[in-house]
Image (cartoon, rainbow, N blue to C red; front, side):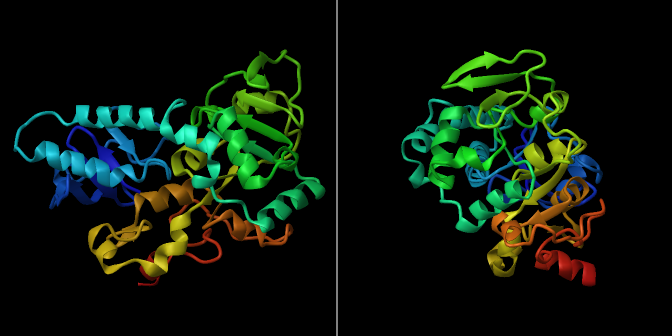
Length: 335
């Protein structure tokens, strides 16, 4: 839920209007940091998945551990009170990320060779739910930016050897968030060798496709007259990017931890969902882009297929959180 101003070396928590509520530079709080932006919204208030130059966001579980690392690096760089620019520090950290998470990095090697060290097995209830969806006439699809070797290894460990049978369509190396806005063609993978699809070729079950775009999914009429519901855990790359293409359900693990926020957490950044006396920017963006927010896929798997749930209506309210709204947001709305 934090935004980075790389030029100033600031980590920012923003309210629903995009104004600064809390800020740190390195390991030190910056009182009244909002004055740096004239008390107005910062240049990037999550109105698009791609931030302008000099701005960034920790957008998924892979990048969140870098928040304290970045703060420590800024603290070290600022300790001599120099006026050296801080943007290069962020650039260098991104390069380090590419080294760790890139195709030849430690993370990918571990996922391919020893997925059990990093990946939990999927619950039986979710596997049964996926099968039930298909038996009920729904089409299921797996869409991921991970490359084919990683997907095969993770999915086999997580979903079982027959994981391809759970989906009518599998798309890897999707390069989100651009998948939802670009017009990139699909390639079919035969082993790891890509093959260009012919212009009128349909997307088939039991095959693995890479790259592509949402517009190509529609053009090749894979959906037909069906509506699509996409379930993702990245607010920017999944939920916000897919707005205007399909409905989305956001997986928000922080919903499950709201009751256990420590006093130290409350004192520093507080709840992800509120900022001072108003909803946070994160909450506003979620409520505007998603239809529903749940703490895990298991919550969806435990519901009857015919169950109807109240959806977000675009305003920052507790309406679309299931099974219950975050505690901090409920208290805010009741006050």
